[in-house]
Length: 337
Length: 106
Image 1 (cartoon, rainbow over the protein chains, first blue to last red):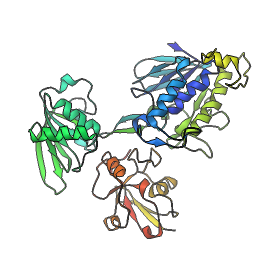
Image 2 (cartoon, helix red, strand yellow):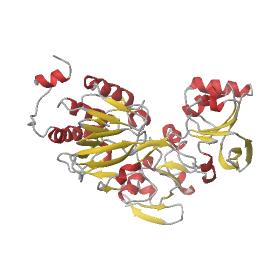
Image 3 (cartoon, helix red, strand yellow):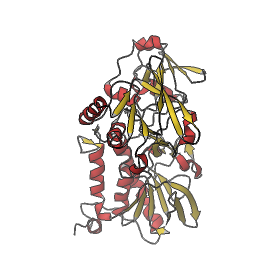
Image 4 (tube, rainbow over the protein chains, first blue to last red):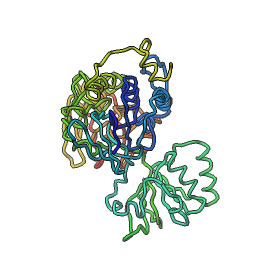
């Protein structure tokens, strides 16, 4: 059991700034995120897109924002638990106990949910009959390349992941790349490599078509794709890889007894506490009258929630509002003096 | 106000008056239309507001920019008449527009 002052769920921009707001008040935190790195939507959905409404930052990308936030919270030496999803939240007197799908357990008087629109999961193929092959012949990510050696692999998608894995796996397997239109997205260099391998007969490209059906018992034997003109083609296949990006799912949050409004958590706008004492929600996932889903609003919410967290984590100390420009103790916590 | 018809994949439809200047996605969110989630809030980053536009309206819509077409690649069961409803701004010319939500979206 890991004990701390605050458990932050979500390592997106608001989760990261929450670490800062707690840190300057002398509170410790752990951060749990289902993804394998920090940044949330900023990194997964728009790493290269410029953001223009971060105060005093005229323009920055999702990736730069994440990098700077991580830099800003460096002094607090916070522990991150990536690739873990919070499954269970239960009360233990004054504390909350949080369990993850990786069997880690945490205990703290405060939980701050900065979960965005939920946890990211791969967008799955819509064909019902292919579901039963998942993790046997159908995969949404490549974790161990060895599994994909000397196989007939059909890869779906038109973006970087589909192109990169087509190139990589073509070194030792037979690849068919399937996409709904003739144009591919992705780096021009990768594309020209793919086209070269296509000419050499090392990669087959099927466009414009989509998955129509699948055949096989325990494992996939073949798939059929349907072209835009209605023609159907059968492709012998051992493994299907599908790369249609990520989708956000609320997941277990809905079962923690919090007052929900569609996919958001209701909070008061004084300290962003939910209907459960000591559980807060900030950023896109919280809802209150006038809520705006902006990063800057999330920063404000984190600042206010951290004050209440202090009061709960240090019931015998008096909370004092301080400025970073003048507070010696804040500057010490930031490693400045 | 222009009327927009949202039809779900089972054929059930709802017609709503949507203010000029709002997007077809916003009209759906404000009126709790199922099947249009708009997780990213309209920044062409999630494809959860993907709709099929009734054929006869396609030519009346501004062409999809590259980023929209790229995002539709990620959507469930894209078709020729696929659009992201967050990119369709309601005007008087679109009075009567009909869009259908895919069988699976979220």
